[in-house]
Image 1 (cartoon, one colour):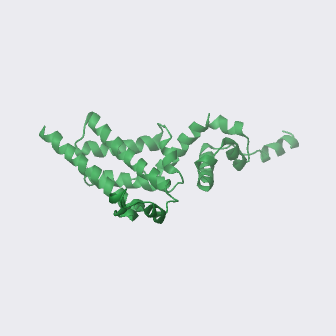
Image 2 (spheres, one colour; image 1 turned 180 degrees about the vertical axis):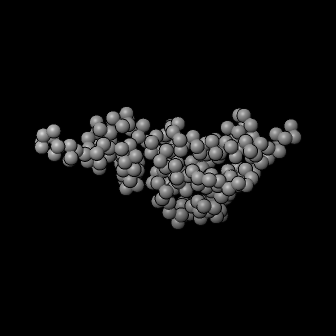
Image 3 (tube, one colour; image 1 turned 90 degrees about the vertical axis):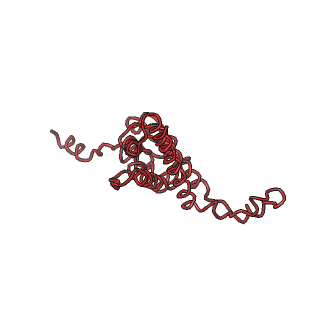
Length: 217
């Protein structure tokens, strides 16, 4: 091998890894929101060209799918060996925490369709808990989609309500036109932790009731 060839080989850049692309894309979203993410901006941040990215992800949707998997991966882990309700609650809380840890996390996951390990593992863990509780067949699948959709929707609401001024809302509420809203506990509107816990308890109570009906039918 010539000196020229040897020198070129030594300075050749290492191949770009998909995980590096995903991590950089998530960092860009954390900085500027999901709307700011473009393949051109991403390639600039990585010091490469868009065609290189398209060799790893055939389009932006494929990239967002991989980003969703990365977000969901942090929700995985061992579960308490207790009753099904505790396991479902733990999974729901972990999912919410994973979505909130990433700016626009709910939008990333909600807009993705992926069959990679993190998504499938999370669904499988939820399904296992439901089946352990007594749900079978279609009812078990409906139960996990109910929980997943609730977590996604509540988190989407929270991540989109960063600029609500309760004083402005209250000032716009006429006691004559909106009597119930005018005397309501408006701060609860933005108490997302309390909202989430209340809704999750309501869902698990409803699922428990469904099991009771199923066993006595």
